[in-house]
Length: 295
Image 1 (tube, one colour):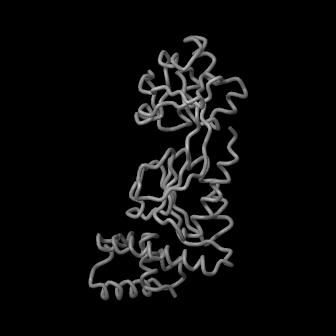
Image 2 (cartoon, rainbow, N blue to C red):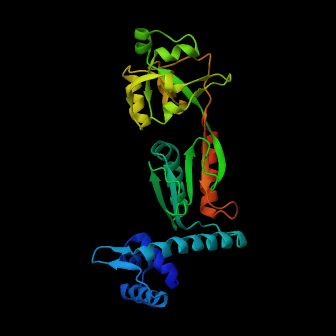
Image 3 (tube, rainbow, N blue to C red):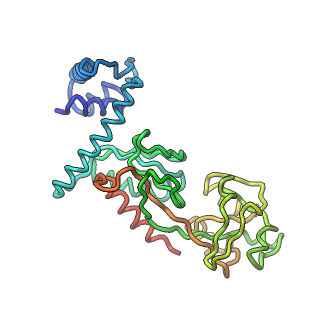
């Protein structure tokens, strides 16, 4: 039988006393009684209860965040001490971008879930959640060098980038002959933040992206791909997105004699050692996957 504390954590994560009881194969009255005893011991109300949802109070949420951290540490310690364990369990919460999540991370998590049925996964995409402890995030996968010195970072790999456009766009506007020519061309942007980052070339040269023109912006790589295919401009994006279209001739690489640098993929987390086994397994799998990305 789970402790009252672990039971409380489970209720928060599934959202109701009834669901927690069903998952644990115990009576709802048992769950309710244990939570009531826990509230009495702490002398505080932990949940707002309704017939549909059980929502933690402000005190309950703070208690959950602290308990989850302690339970993660316990799980990690036990995995280190009893390394003959073959199963991975518990909740794995990952924050990442939509595109990294869809293309790289979701397939890895699918494999993990099939191999380890005791594992539960929550992937938070599209939100730049910097406060990992506050949101109880085990690991965040980010593009570029991390700016937050309070977090530990692990470099996982580099994804090659490319400047790409449609043949029709270049036929209409002219083919750039050198890096400086880029300022005369239309770009399809990912975000306003991207325009603040200079394009870096393997030669060491840079192009200030703020000099670039463009009237299309989308924070979805698949949408950007459609805009580029529709002859709306040049994009500075991941090669994996465009390699099939380049091979078929639908798109062409711009300035192939001046290859651009790839972008770093980093994992951010709060503990420097004793990472939970589920996090280590995930990071190792992601690192291996990134190593297979063709340059």
